[in-house]
Amino acid sequence: MILDEEVFAVILAVSIISSALGVALVLKPENPEPFSALGLLNEECKIGDYPKIAINNSLLRLCIYVANYMGKPTYYKVVYKLAYNETLPSKDSPSPEPVVSEWRLVLAHGENKTVLVDVVVYDPWTRGRVALVFELWTYDHASSSWVYTGVWNHLYIDVVSV
Amino acid sequence: MLVATPLVATNPGPELDQLDKVVGDLVHKLSELDAKGVNVTPVLVRLDEAIAAYERGDIESAERAVNEAISVLSELEATAGEVYRLVVLSKGLTIAGVASIPILVYQLLPRVYLHLWFKTRRRWLVRR
Image: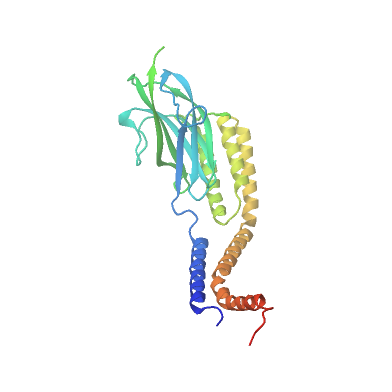
């Protein structure tokens, strides 16, 4: 044989491995680890330079970023609450504080959206420092109700009176 | 960029629950179509418009956008079977193509090599 048998065997082995990998890539699930992302940005919709102080009962402009990597279109709402250290949300439960505002949006898989929002800042228990909490919820079709995703952002603000 | 109008959820009202139910159901149907490979963006755009109109307090526009979304969804559902068959066929052809590479290499490589070997030595002369 003109073509060396060992060289031929190596080329054949490489082609078999490449082919197996190619088939595995075509058959693999498209989104093995679904997740949603929530980001809090400043009024220019950039990370950093967040406000530190706000006047009681004033409006603060911020930007909310939501991204969908759930592998399917998803109906989201971002819930805004004013909380303190002991009432911050966790991965398992949302903050027990009442809802102040909420924003809804529908995103396709792989899509993200940045929304400019004006949030009211006040200090319900006049403790001087509150956390602006933004929680991400998704609509569950089976139970026809909103489900907390375990994703949230918070920003501490010193609330001052005029 | 426009500032999004918030919905104060302390007093959601029946319309908001209704909106959630309708949009939630439509998004669920869209996820089924999306899994079949159907492009669901036209419906999502209309649902986004419906939500934005509702947040502005323009219930009439919200209802109109939802109805448009339902209408486009029905059209997509009618073509979903065909789209799914095409997606499956294209995936099957891709797998068949990739899986046949080793067979092609086994069958063709020695022939091609031989052909090239002789072609490059076509003008060679044999000396005794």
